[in-house]
Amino acid sequence: MKRTKTILVGTTAVAAAAGVALAVLPAFAADGDGSAHRSAGQGGSSSDLAVQSGAGGSGGSAALFVASLNGANEVPVQGGPAVGDRDGAALQFVKVQGDKVSVAVKFRGTDKPTALHIHQGAKGTNGGIKIDFTELIGKGRTEAAGWTGAVTGSVKVKDKTVLDAFRTGPNGFYANLHTAAFPGGAVRGQFHKVTGSFPFDRALGNVQASVVTGKQIYECKKSADGTLSFQQRDVRAVLGGNIAHSFIAPNSGTPQWIAPDRSAVTGALISKTPNGEANIPELDLKATQSGKKRGLFAHTQEIFRLNTVGGVAPAGSCSQGAIVGVPYGADYVFVQK
Image 1 (spheres, one colour):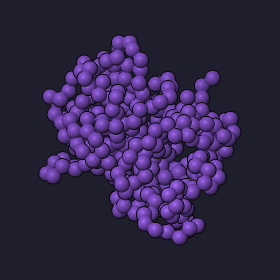
Image 2: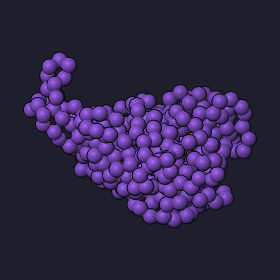
Image 3: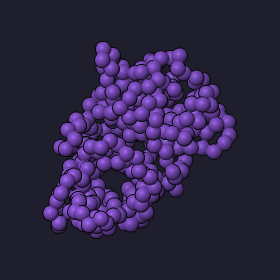
Image 4: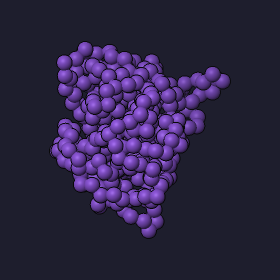
């Protein structure tokens, strides 16, 4: 039976203690496609490429990756082309199997893409283009409810070194979507490995929801060495689509997400990725259903917390029992089975 999934997206609006400016993500729905235009883009040239288009692919185990893109992640170059569309956002999945690299990306709040690349570079740095999906833009039409448009398809990558590096260290690579107004990159996001699996033709059915308003809740408690410090007690957030996010109970350490349709999931840590001293880490969590058996989260298997801003526990001394809430922002991606 065919399942219909709702795509939810909200805005990230946070008074982050780190003082990091966030992109304001719009909420609108439209369909669109892009026009193909090859561009070396930001921090690279066409000579970096080892890509040949093709629909086929060799065997071997498939690996899945995800990136949540926004304009605030772009890194400007002095004197370089414009970057950072603050109204834009995108969600991108990539599958690598043999020398075949497949992409499924949906975008909103941007002009039509002129180029779509994977670059090699850590967060906050620019790097050369390693995989180019630009030729796929504008070929056919893919529906992406609640989004401006989408791009899907596959290319062949002959450089095994690039593919091996991407498979083993995806966080050292980033997705970059370019537009005419932002030729250096409109929206960007680092890649993370997806632990679970799903049919790749359903990739655009995965759900992204950003924090509209939220706080990480900390309580001053005694540590193992007897000193007092702020330790996590809870989280209180509202995500796009009116998704409620908290712990199942204060001090439980178990996060939960409840959709308006009363489907719900809890999360257990798979891995943690540092995201700078001023920001809470990015997370990959295994999902367990905890609500109604039908609805938004009924088939969720994995949850990512990405593009985190703020939310870090206060440092220094504190009075036992004191509770504080620290504003934070993040994009949550709910991967479906």
